[in-house]
Image (cartoon, rainbow, N blue to C red):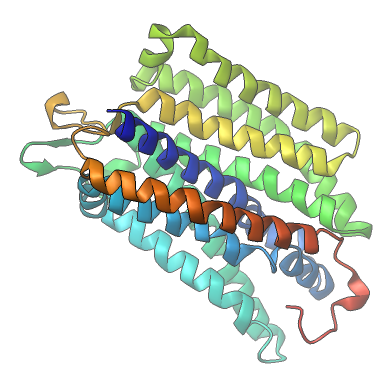
Length: 341
């Protein structure tokens, strides 16, 4: 049971790391039509995330790989029950990745506008659909011993949509804060002002989501059994409040760090509430998939743990080096260089 619990925690941690890292560049992609009012600003927005986005998405692959190797039954059910939203997410991420490279290949405003639109959609859809998917997992999926009985439309229930909106506004705030920290001039000022304006919608949606979680999910069961777990909620709330305080002081890197803690805390709120379930069933509790009835063999989990202990620090070290190397602000004078987007 110890190995299964460790891997359940690591599974949740990898999703949290992905949401924190890729969340800000998804947020900036969604902000492109609103803050990218001219080509200079749009190029600055692309280059604020250009060195980071592909490394950030490594954590999505890692989270998916861990699901496949550590919890193969969950992976199988996930790609059968949530096939439509997962494929939409995949295609959106592909189009978004291509947009970085293709928009500059032809010097035509219409060509760039096309790929800017693809970049926006490719950022919005993953944020929205990941929120919808995880909210439905928190709520419980309509499955029993005979299989999954839901559709894409059934996933768009009020609680699922609330989860989607929560992810969107969290990532918008995360992205606006990063953009304010990485840019100068008018774009810097507008991104900072927008981040402050976004804080109230984030707080509002977060409160509504917490209330909805109480009314429509069993997430609070573990918290009521072990009240000390509410510390996770308190830390998350404190981080969200800290984000606003740092935004007010124009301390944008500190605000971004507080926003990162908020996203990680929101993820762990759901993960802790789920434990030990990973795919709970709304129709038949006996059909739920948990860390214990859906995991690989102890030998597989042990070998994976050794591999993770060796290679994850290497990945973290490399990514820390990338973030430090490109921590400087985007310089508009350098946007004409050949190696920038």
